[in-house]
Length: 185
Image 1: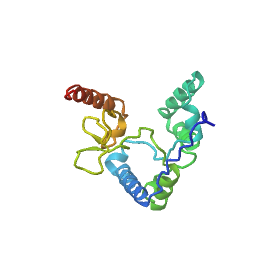
Image 2: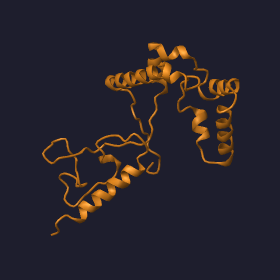
Image 3: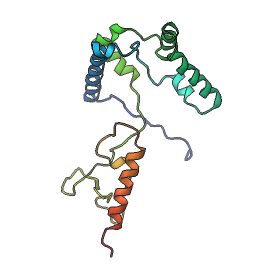
Image 4: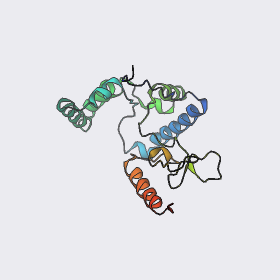
């Protein structure tokens, strides 16, 4: 059916190198969290993910807003209450300091709890015209397509460390300036 929603399969961690890199980065984060200087500034260690509960609470609506505010207040509340909210509401029982040093737990956590952040970038490599891998030039011009430009997050050569909104605006403004300066005719 033409109007059916597409089925998108991200194939997260299908490549062993992707898994290994994420596992390494997660291991570094666990080591930092275990360090004495950091441990004294935080509460419990737990693994969360984009669970059914989290997805349900992300749906717009007043009831979800109220529930989310209540959960946030409980997380800032007394330690026993916070631990219960984390254990049964957020981490599904996956809590405990020992996990930070367990290589088996780290690998399982990466496999089971990895999810996309939905700020996909870099699908059309931006670069120099002499690079055969380049799809889009630095001004947004699509290589091999006359009069066509692409100016969105797909041409970003690196994933931003935050939301893509402001970087895309900056990219679009810069490319718009370059497009307007192109010779005509």
